[in-house]
Amino acid sequence: MNDSLTSLNILQNVFCIFYAIAWGTASNAQPRWGAFEYAAIFEPKGRKAILRIVLSWIFLNFFAVCFFVWVLYLLNGAHWRIELGSLSTSNFWRTVAAIVPALAPFGLYKLWMGLVQVGNKFCFTDREVKRLQEHHKKRAFEGAIANIVAGLALIILAGAIPMSLS
Picture 1 (spheres, helix red, strand yellow):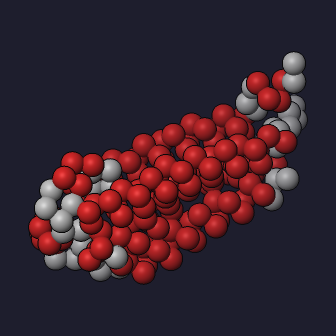
Picture 2 (cartoon, rainbow, N blue to C red; picture 1 turned 45 degrees about the vertical axis):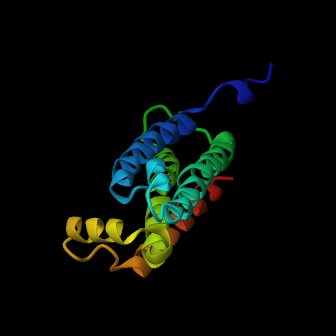
């Protein structure tokens, strides 16, 4: 049996732990925006929730899982080097290269949030817009483009770093 297919190396384990933390943390903010608010579909004008839920599944589930699998694959060939008697700087940078990609769920969340902010007329009913505006002190839909840019930048950075190990 091929060991590389059945067990994770140290860097893959580091990535998995940090990715789980980041994905869980990003998930805590999703209920505020109704990312997976299936009950809203059955309310008047609930069809607006369908687009929001579809975008949620694409960005917050599908892309998140695809990114996770891709980085896990990239880190498959990256290993710590055991160097007795010295702290290896290459191990430090390898560890950084395993942690930074784990921040991608924040980028995916920011990208999703920016898209639903830009398309708020298509994703939220008037009642939901009012609720979000009250919660965010009238600033719920400001900064949409900044969220999209920040999300894309974080995803690109998170994807580029582990590629440098290959």
